[in-house]
Length: 195
Image (cartoon, rainbow, N blue to C red; front, side, top):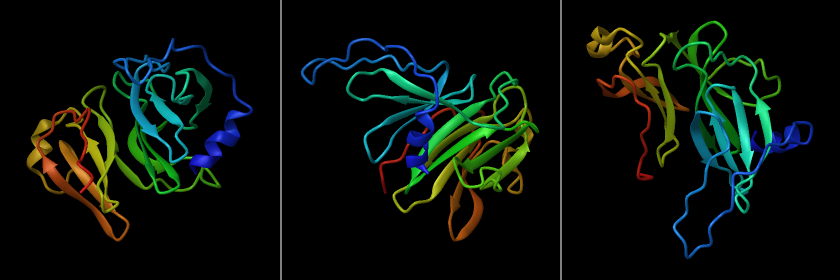
């Protein structure tokens, strides 16, 4: 749960300053204090969370100062692949959901901070390749979770409806994961308009 991240933060080391935050009248440019940030969400409480791809940490950032005040490691994240690691974050109701390459080499999507944390992932994909993994997440207005999957080194599978390669997958609570658009080499970022 998102609240559990705050509880874990009290026992984690704090980070450094991200610099001065501009006023509302100035253009806002704030450096995110997370190496290779790949996911950025705002919790219902207003806390900014960033996924650090190469460290496997979720970095908490104070929205008023831009300073990071906790870096929480996510167990099981393997960043040894060229484009692997902690790849995406979304806040789904009260849960923080992440996509990452795990220590068995698979692209997975799982709720973070579940009790027990070792619970089954929401989705387990195929073994990832060095590059073109994808892994970005977004939510549609109806709660459907979108999972970006790259071609995983095999673009010929883009036209295979049974393979997740080169697709954005839609996953709802009441239906199996299914292809949404197809043909994406490496969906690094995508969003929706809330509908």
